[in-house]
Image 1 (spheres, rainbow, N blue to C red):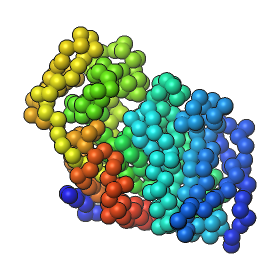
Image 2 (image 1 turned 90 degrees about the vertical axis):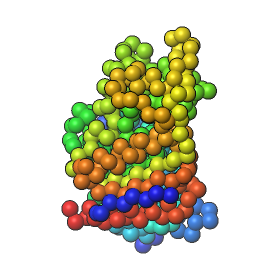
Image 3 (image 1 turned 120 degrees about the vertical axis):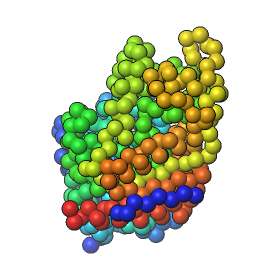
Image 4 (image 1 turned 30 degrees about the vertical axis):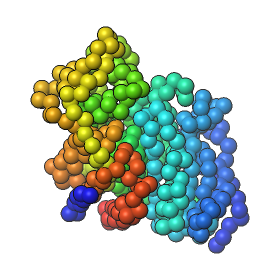
Length: 378
């Protein structure tokens, strides 16, 4: 294991409130009805709360893309400390799947330790589940959830002056993008409001450089039995706002550079916590198939395919989906920019670290608290 750390009054069972939702005056009032979480003395949960108007039957084709979230509470309504740390989680799933309920056990543990946690759903790049949505639309959903937080704070009787934001895999990537965009207004040109500041951001195995050949190798190796390189390219093209299969891959690479967190790193970015796995490597002499002719091509050819002038390494370190190089790229970038960070590299497969390593979970919770506390004086 390697570690890198920077220097740096009971109410009724139900309560009805009517929060304000931007752009949707027809939403029914939010109703908080917390239920006790089994085997958790202090923790309660509210499922499927609305943060926007895109609900199943009202614009969401599938429940996984409805604008809803689950809320984990460290006590009964009216008994939560006003200054309880708030953590907003964005789930992973390759930007095409996943769910807000994927880490329910961990969120219950966080609630037991005093956190208020909201785990949200958002649009996905999946035709079956609502359409081929882009990074921009996903970030807009995060922004809508953040804009909802003042109303939620009022309903809970707590203060949410700033948040800890985090996610796993694709959610880690989106969390970094959103937090770094908020530190550099309009850098992505998406008009995000950032109504509540991000005190710190956490990425659990989230790619920091989508345009790197190493990332392409890792994701293609993971997909080797599920699809060809062209399929991977088309989805990344759509996610970055391009026309699927209708533009040169180097144009897509330019779009991916723009949507890579490392591109946005500078001294204004919030403290960052990053956690990555390291379980092996992929030799660049290995081969993949390109749909154009079906013939095998060496992974080393991806460097030329994406327009890189670097000499391909003999192998690419990977956790199965994301390269170790993404960890190195991000931590090096944060160091150069002088951004406080805590980072950890563990011998676990992609996004399995927190579920299997209690010590690392506590490391995360301690850093979330530390950076949230430090932001109070700013």
